[in-house]
Image 1: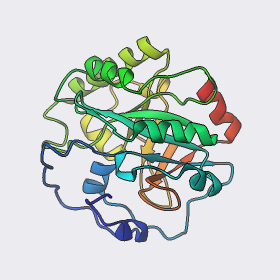
Image 2: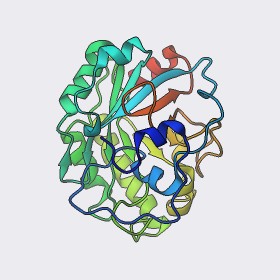
Image 3: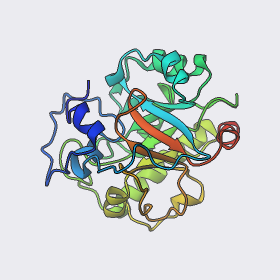
Image 4: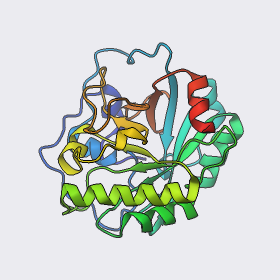
Length: 262
């Protein structure tokens, strides 16, 4: 169960962004995609039941917070892809990974794995190798989405991990290079525009070969991070129809299949 913000408040879309967020204890190693974005940016305010979804593919992302997911139920409600947290830093593995990663695949979804970055703990290549060794693989089976890097606000202290934009840019490049060397795929980058522009910036054009998975809660997507001109996935809601976060693929299902296949 997510304890940072009540699920009822998330669904209502009424939780304001805190002025500042207290560091979490270092023992709380399981941070899901968007956990820190919600802490710092809030969950937004919605005026409609859902964003425009014509031609979009609904999906979800989950971590150990969802436990054993009822994949047939999510499939029946329309989810067609899922990202599953695999690792964090170099010391955490999702204990529910096999049920979630295998279960989503078994019901027919396209699925991929993601890594929660802690850039001040070790270099990008080290964390990338830990990720690939523990679930962040890619297979040319037409059903496996590219591995994803979740890089967002620091759960433990300084927003940008005490690192300059240049240093974080190099960290992301190091992570990407190691993932590509191991899987032949550039990772999807998950982030928020506010965090990315403050902490990484636009000195390197990651949008040239890295799909963007953007977190922004509300009816409208808003501006994209520096260096990106197109988004692939929008995490538009922190709770809703499916377990975990609610996502929309920016295209049709056959286009999503092509991303999985190449």
